[in-house]
Length: 199
Image (cartoon, rainbow, N blue to C red):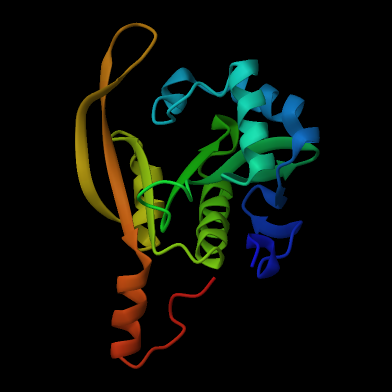
């Protein structure tokens, strides 16, 4: 079953910013996503393994979408990309049951529900893929993002000290949050709440 068999896009979502559209990212979005990524503060990119504001990195990202190892949702407001939620998985690795969620949102729309809506829908999309465990990582000072993921049931699993280095040479800690979907589902069923963790 493909991830879009149980989720339907585009999806319109009400936020404090007004209505936004959540839709799947494809090759035609490369220029718009590059413009979005290039206006992000460098600090916001530190938890990503690659610098998506570089055209060659973004081109590789689009190829990964076409191959199916990455699924990306875009948050669009008035024709402009204001956020991106990505699910990364490697079916050929030792952890084909694990997916990583990576979300970034434009600074000018933060605190207006865009990040929450994007995170919730990316999480639901990941659940619809049948993944058993989900991870999210970010710098420890991104308290708003951490709170959103904790609200979805993620818990801190690791602190990676001095794990990333910014362009100025300063090192930053990364927190890794995990959500054991299979375990939470089993617990909910044991409590008589089947379907509590649903896509």
